Length: 253
Image (cartoon, rainbow, N blue to C red):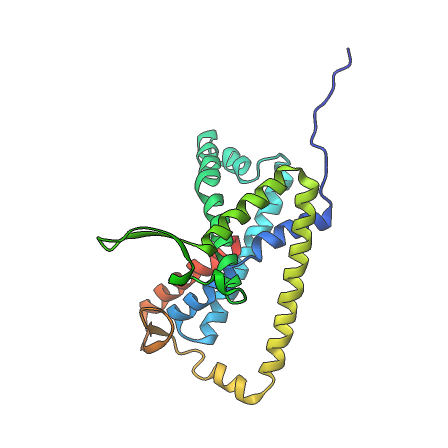
């Protein structure tokens, strides 16, 4: 009886793989964390600097992953690399952490961001008291509230999960279409930004005191800047590190 060799059936091409990686990196994070980065460093110059450092780290990590994938061409990604570099227990713990915490948290963050930004176009999705569909508790200052936007986020996760369970082909096309749309939108935004920045007044406003690091003091609702405090010495290193929390999260999101 002839012995058969079981192998994975290749279903993704170069374009599909590229879109999956680009789509997983260029997510909602970049639109969410820039405000928090600016709050930590307080200037346009240091905002760009934080993104440049993160970009260098991301490229270094990508090259490392490329080398690892060539050394260990097996299914499992980081699980395989951690198992080979350390021990099976480390890979096992990472695998379950990724399944139960890391990836689930990322999916929830993306879904919430989708609903949050959709609220700018569809008023029922705004996080206001008028759009609460369920409320419980609150006598002691704590309450459980379910907004329409949160319900939309849950339904979106269920829908995309169902589509992906139908097979890799349907998930591949959704990923490719949405990633191409995101890339075209971002390139358009960049061109539009350069167009606005070509005006001397706009350029001057953005780059005045661009390298004077300061911590912004914002109102409780985050809607306005009340003032700022200068950051010098080792505090500047801490501010950059705190700001990079968001940019690194965004690179993974």
